Image 1 (cartoon, one colour):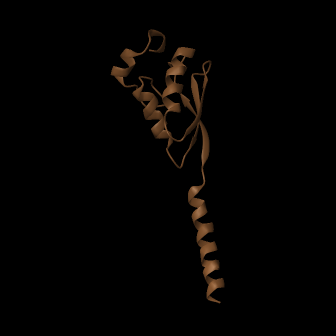
Image 2 (tube, one colour):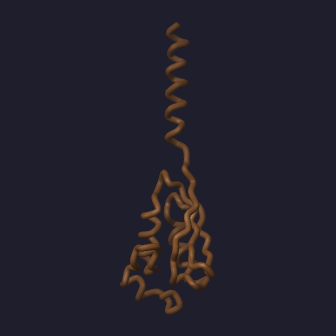
Image 3 (cartoon, one colour):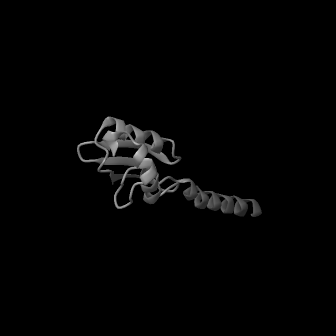
Length: 109
């Protein structure tokens, strides 16, 4: 009896804990008005792809939107916004870092 009860408890714990390892994958569009060229989008993409939890970063240059697919269990929208802003780009309602913006190529300012 103890053996069966022990297995039931262990199975229950395994089922409960398995939810902790699930991913919550989301794709969100971030408005980046100054992202008008491939050069600008590459700066953002390279930086975002080095960020743990980000799976893809796809630009829409015509609309000025960077579509980011990420695991929301590892980071949130605000993390992505602040990463882009730190590069010197205004994103959504987050202002660009002025020092970083001054160092961007002219086409990206």
